[in-house]
Image 1: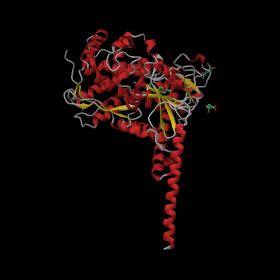
Image 2: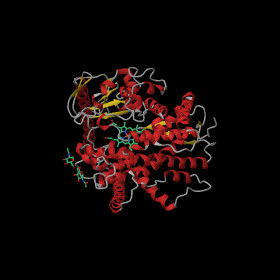
Image 3: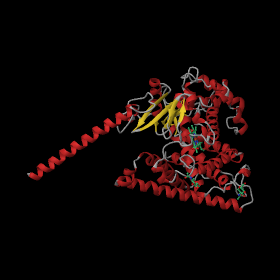
Image 4: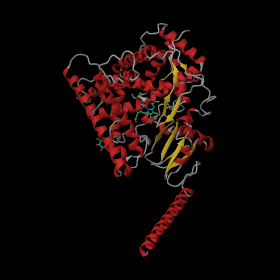
Length: 533
Ligand code: HEM
Ligand SMILES: *[C@@H]1O[C@H](CO)[C@@H](O)[C@H](O)[C@H]1NC(C)=O
Ligand SMILES: CC(=O)N[C@H]1CO[C@H](CO)[C@@H](O)[C@@H]1O
């Protein structure tokens, strides 16, 4: 009896103490909120979660939420994740300092240090998540040098066409010129197969795997073991994409202290060790080949990277480099970066582009006119580098779609030191979000911003639209894959529309998107009708 009373008493005591601490916490939270320095307008935060609940009202679609806030609070506002402030910038002049490419820019870091990424070994290696300016600058320079060299771009242009023709064969083989199908299932696989071929001279077989899974009358013409083997590799790569999300957003205590978390953490780390091991073996093979052959090498990206600043350097630009060659580990991590940055971005945009073209017959007509003029009327003529430079309207269409439906609705920066932006003092270590959607739809920068009008990109002086069109980010961290992305997208759009006339499954079919760090298109139902006009 006494014991029971005691335990009841201590239970209620604990509840009391908990309530008092909570109240104190909330009072302290709002006290600090109301006396904060340099307050900006913004949605009202809750203790612990900040503004996450408002984001949830937008189903996690951070781009849409940003546009909503901009309408309510203007072009600069603040939001909270827990106690941490994030300042949003939604006008080109406000983002200008962040977009400066100067080597000693205050805006090198993209976000806070993350112990999950430290654990994965990405914080001082590779490019995207690298926080060590020395190794980042070197890797990025080597990567940019290799990817823009004609040794890389010439075969890359051929690979895009080879892989597209393969996909085309499968789609026709499954009768998708008459039957509706989900194009969003196919296009990331096309990009995966292209990227594996260009970077490693390896065939990822993801198109063939999907085709075979539909039980076609005749299987894809690849040895079964090769398909199975590369399936394991690609799955491991995809798992690594999930690992990045898991390590970034799961608190360390859950990752390493709960049984479920531990199991998952171990699974992801084991996968990464396996993936890095496979990559390093591939890179070693390439190095051996480079050193032991005098004949012209097949210059995939890994071979180029492995050869940079060795006696077999093929990029011919490295006289001024004083560093040693890239290590195997760094090349492996760069490959992981390329696949994380270069597959889902471009393939999602292709879905939006096709949809917009189909919805705007006058644009389709002009696009076709350009394709027929530049490429001729032979629908299987090989497309060359020179042709691509002439496809100006095609490029304008791609840009206009990306302006209205950006894949990356914001980019972030973490200033090292205090600064002033648009008259507002900013503290070092305070996270900044550049609202890509907000800038690309800003009526100060764009006439009739909501209207789909590719001509606006042909009419304007290109140098004047840099900060007003941050499709690829900007400044030190500007996307280094942008030329390759444009090349790939131009070729694919040209190959589709010169020969086919994609038709939506029903007149009111729309692409379905989900925000997953980027706007991912998971469904676009269409028929790949042959072009008749
Ligand atoms: C339509 C296609 C693409 C879009 C919209 C896109 C967009 C972006 C954006 C917005 C950023 C961040 C820039 C910033 O923070 O300022 C970025 C970074 C990056 N992208 Fe892309 N990208 C695309 C294609 C590619 C491709 C094809 C590759 C590689 C082959 C690639 C590799 C990278 C890498 C490595 C970074 C990190 C750069 C760094 O941290 O220094 N991207 N991209
Ligand atoms: C960055 O990496 C280099 C080379 O590995 C190392 O010497 C340097 O100390 C690192 N810098 C920082 C700030 O960690
Ligand atoms: C192996 C090799 O060629 N290393 C070179 C890297 O670049 C520096 C600077 O140009 C050269 O001095 C090295 O010989």
